[in-house]
Amino acid sequence: MQFDDEMAAFFAGGVSVCIASRNASLVPSIARAKSCRLIRSTPTRIRVVVSVAHAGECLEDVRASGMISAALSRPSTHRSLQFKGSDARIEALTEEDRASMVLYETAFAASIGPLGFARTFTHSFLESPPDEVAIEFTPTDAFQQTPGPGAGARLP
Amino acid sequence: MTLALEAIRECLDGQIPAVIATCDPDGVPNCTYISQVHFVDGEHVALSFQFFNKTRQNILANPVAAVMVIHPLTGARYRLQLRYLRTESEGPLFENMKAKLAGIASHTGMSGVFRLQGADVYRVTDVSPVAGQTVLPTPPRRSLLAAVRSFAQSTQRCNELSELLDGALAQIETQLGVAHSMIHWLDESGERLYLVASRGYAQSGVGSEIHLGQGVIGVAANARTSIRVTHATSEYTYSRAARESVRQSHLADRLEAEIPSPGLPSPGSQLAVPITVRDQLLGVLYLEDAADSRFGYDEEDAVVTMAQHLGLAAHMLGQTSERDTVRPRPAHSESAPSGQPLVIRHYRVDDTIFVDDGYLIKGVAGAILWKLLREFDSTQRSEFTNRELRLDASLPLPDLSSNLEARLILLQRRLAERCGHLGIEKTGRGRFRLRVARPLRLLEAM
Image 1 (cartoon, rainbow over the protein chains, first blue to last red):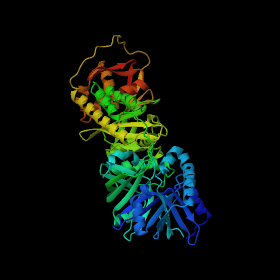
Image 2: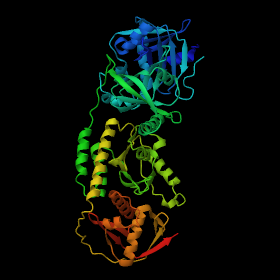
Image 3: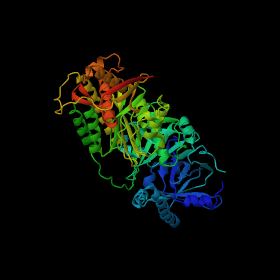
């Protein structure tokens, strides 16, 4: 899977980020993330930050199964990508994670501001109890999900 | 279920995309943004099926899904647990979602990309708020129940259909703050609707037509369901529907026969609601506003209830209209027709009437006017009753008496707008007088 500078810029460009997992009965669960970034290691990894309270069962499902899907979408253009992994693990928050949340809020506010959402909306939307954790996984599959006939195509 | 689905309907209007999670039989989750989660009833939602994607493959194999929706004003998020039941590819739900999706597509620059193939219906097994979230306060709103109460009361005070229809549109402006509205009535063919009352437009457009199935009004009539569009879309605008109706009609070659339709050029919000009585379609009540997202689920419910009161009141007026009442005659003395003769041309094929080469009216209203003018021409009689029109076998009137009344309103308003030398004046309930100011020259055209 190729993670070039353009992809890194997409991650940093104020995208909406949701994650999904599932329990042992294959019932899916869903949560929104408070930040998302690429870790340019070998292999490249994806690291998202979630609030434990916000994520609820989804966090438990990630912990139990390691299965995760992360959907990223830029609201202004609807460009959307989905990444999947099976080795997700939950980690304590680092200073970099805290910095990423601040950057994320700024970028997300700039991204949805022109669509009519005030800064106060973005702030309260992302606000949570100080209970955040990080989830890191190796993306093994990626899909194009921008609405249209090309949606669902696997990325090289 | 920790919350009632009705309590979070505002999150189900496509203003902020929702997200759906599904899982394939191998245990791989899938997560994607979706443009529309539609409220069906207290236990069901429908999602738009546009493309055969991974979500669809998954729900057909493992029919459970988790959806997160967002309140557009407060930012509150809710999780829905869903179980897939079926896909509908026609009928009221499908038409409703199709019209709304066109608005969402246009709003998000996705016209031509979003195309509804089906409405996927899901049972909602749980609704819960996301824990620990910060929620903005909701702004105060006007009471829709009080608005409906006032509207319902006002419909009971009317003695005539014209008063009822105009009063309804006035109430909508007062109670809901919606300044642009119109009422179309179903014509005797059951294939077209004609505009009988409007409010808030430079041109009344009385007599302009819409075919069933065209635009929000035609679709609402055809599918017998309310259609609500929350964002501007060129696909469903009234003016486009009216233009297409004219293009399809046999009048297309007589361009002057097109009555200009009113309607905002690019309404941000549209709501069309069928007016029915005992499942019989009478017409369509239509509201529009320049701003986006003016009408939500609650406004839709309020206007649907208003339309039901309107239908019932119109029906009751028809039931009692045989009991004629007589109004005092106007004080001014009637003068005999004088001046240049008015040339009235009647086309028998569709009862189209031209006055001095200008198009006036067609159909049943045209037939009624032609009958009245011939009667006046031969006997000088100017006083008429609804009852004699209803008993006249030569007039193609449907059984609903409110339809005759609606035709007379149409005729009266077209004459008032287009021809000052002819007029219809009510002289009591079920009675009217034909006013003729100039001599007549009646021509039967081929």
